[in-house]
Length: 96
Image (cartoon, rainbow, N blue to C red; front, side, top):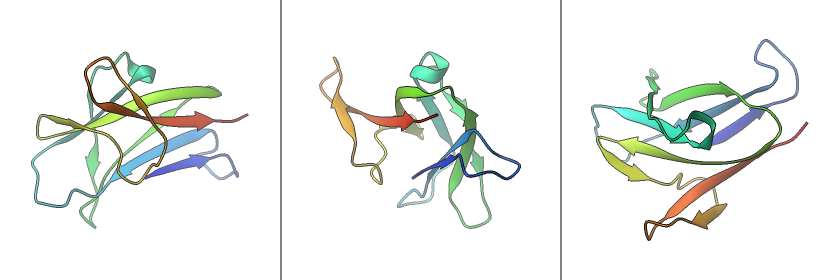
């Protein structure tokens, strides 16, 4: 799940990534072209989702979640592109 915070408020200009794992997990990380595919820890929320916010310049970004060591695309985002590893990466477009 992605939320582009472009409508104002204290998080204006940020993109929020969130995922609700289907089972209990120990750790969820976020990796993508915005951080050179170096996984960063996502914060566990009270409702069980994991979330992270990033300040991103306008453009297209590929990303994946790393759930307990397994790289998975964002199932709530229909935009995917094939990658060289035989799977797909999720894609987010950040507008001005």
